[in-house]
Image (cartoon, rainbow, N blue to C red; front, side):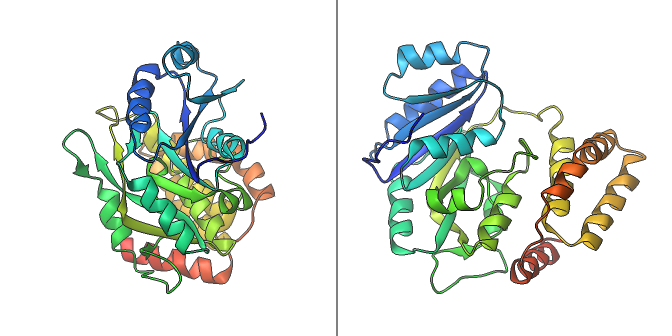
Length: 292
């Protein structure tokens, strides 16, 4: 699938799998936006009626039908295929507030070093602020003279807008993590390539997740945090995180699963290891010290 010449500055990529009902709700919200972004659904080999629903009810939406489940990498495939200079990500249960994408495009136009905008995310029909909003707004990394908002090294994927060229230069989401806590590694890689990653509260996303915990999510997030450490952080740091997880594994089933899955992926992580530049490592340490 080749990328067309962009007719609009910003598009939306949605990675989905087997959630046709929720996807339909999301698409109706996105299609009603005044910015009228180009929309691409990267379907992770759904086995439900997702593709039939898209063909029947949303013929104006582009579909990238992936033959297997690529997890978060579906966003990479979507960004390559979309071709717009700026790309917003939505999950199949999230969408953008009217005017948010137009504001994001203005910020990218005005700040050439800006690589990623982490939005302010509102949750559910009562629009509760996501706790991540405060974490991002209070980042000790502060402001930069050539960037809007507050510098961060984290974000929610369902509330992120990227400069496509920066995203692809940094490699997009990493194949080793698949899904769950995959955002930190991308933020590290963007910063390592010199791109700004900032929280801009005037860019707003809506997220309507299923209530209750997701099976296996705590283990996956702990696994991916440790894999991120081995991929980018100093070896003593990664060893300390591994020892801490091993200690927790003696009494916690999520930690045991996380440790087991990390060890099975560790050879691949070591082959792909690329330590952060010193200034990004210092920023990561500063953020962790504040959050601790």
